[in-house]
Length: 228
Image (cartoon, rainbow, N blue to C red; front, side, top):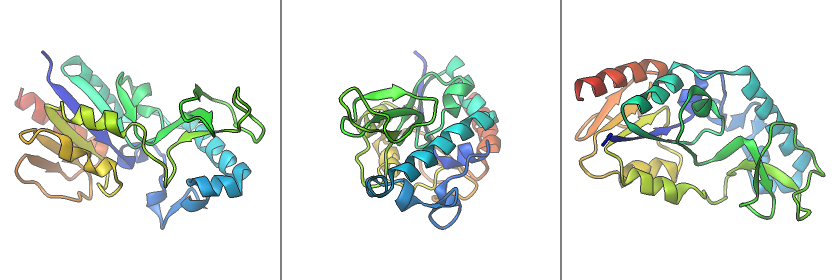
């Protein structure tokens, strides 16, 4: 039986591929107030602005590539049962080769009905006002906006309860409910936390690696190899 590694990833791993996040500067995401482009109220006020914003983010995916950290995590599947739980809405984990990825906050390359959150479709083109689902409702980005429930959180909690090893990469551990997931791992689970500005220190089961994602995953692979 392969050990089960559960990996929680945040914006820090995608930042090294050139994807900016709103946490880079004062609540702005690519120059926009997040409350205008990442809330249901913003979408209601100005749907065209919100649709265009995510169209641009979707196009941006064509200009970025998975970095070495994404590739290193995918390679772990050779020796471990790996589940990645990501706060990121890009598809860089999948493009690097990871086969089991849970997206807590949605996915840029998917859209859904504005009235039926289970009506989800793959989408690679621009999404326009007037693009409707089969029931006649406006289609919207498949993104979990501020103030909305996180549909995948229960599945993520269940996965964390089964972790033999927990890895946290590139997250400030400030965004809930994602930040609370580490608490669901069994008490004796080794935890590796990779971040250049770690929010917590080493101690007990937690080993902090204060490095970027690409540098820290090298250390992680070495530690896992030593510990078998």
